[in-house]
Length: 66
Image (cartoon, rainbow, N blue to C red; front, top):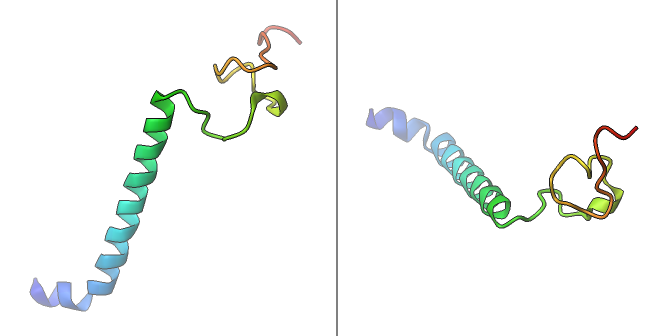
């Protein structure tokens, strides 16, 4: 087991680092979602799906309107 870890230490470290980055990014998305922030960072005025995301932006439309 120790030989396996020694031979693959670089791969294990890089994989662990990527896993930590993924967890941090997911936690930030969850935190932003709970605080009501938009995931795209833009205003809803120019978004084609402004009426569907629930942010209630200025361009909010009824999905039945066509």
